Picture (tube, rainbow, N blue to C red):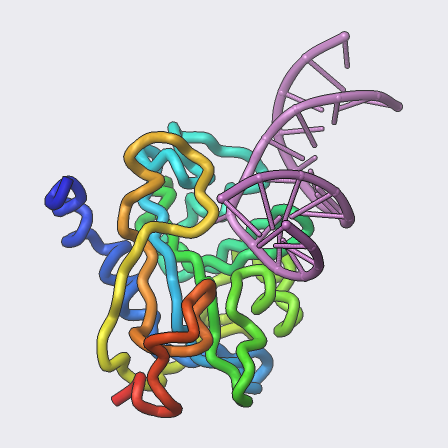
Length: 190
DNA sequence: CATATGATTCTCT
DNA sequence: GAGAATCATATGT
């Protein structure tokens, strides 16, 4: 089981998912928070992805845009924010799952929660990140990046266990983490 | 028009 | 961990 996903680890989308950790998300010139958790969705072969098997509808059309566009998908009454990572017609993207916001208590430790907090809706779907009110700036660098299986995937094959969720070690704003093992304050960044 | 389906979240056990 | 709430889209009759 160990090197089953080795070929994925060298993939662009994985690199992007890791690079997004520590980036600051801005909306209309105002800082929303710093990214602490991302997930990679790697195209038509990924049965956990919205684009599994080449599925393409009005709903997920933005996933087929070229890298640098926002993809906002709505499910269970929640909005999810993704960044498209590949060339046109290659449906790969990185889901932004959690942000570190000011204050002790996590307020954006889930993909639905962060979009509700920041008022991110489908108006950003398909927009280029460099000409948009919603954009990223370099923030800090994680001390260490952990990885685990993705959250909430419903497929039953090997993709359910693929370690494509990336997060900042010890950061209290990552979703579904145990209290034990959290690092205090700024020790998760360098 | 009716029914099914989630890349979720909350609440309870 | 399991179940309900919830709602825009998709698909079937």
